[in-house]
Image (cartoon, rainbow, N blue to C red; front, side, top):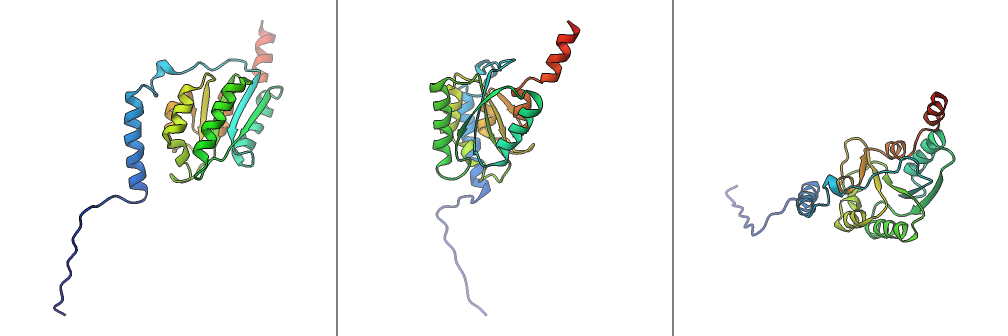
Length: 187
């Protein structure tokens, strides 16, 4: 009943999401100072791309969403899927490599980097410096479509154009065939 308890602390660190958010903010400041988010460094999206590149998991819902939009808006477009993991330890390296491969092959005029929603930890690879730098050095414009409406990653800030979902990214990347036909009728 009269015992005492003493705790001596030499170091305290936020755990979990607090620490991850802190890491994101530090990296954001660094990349912003280097100009990776500057609008004058953003590439212009092509109005009528011939080939669309998609960097995502080939088995995820994001690629299916993109194909659905593509089939509705502009079904004749060629599509190159650069398969990659979109979460986990190896995802950062694979995403960066897919961006590099797309640029080396130069087979498409625009890239969509996509993944469905998830927790901060699930989306972590899109907050890694390696992915941000690969995106920044891409000669092909990149549209990010990562997560849901409320998710904003460092990849979104570096992207040439950001949409909050994979479907939104496909909408922006592709012209609407019906609109094109209507414009031709009005000429």
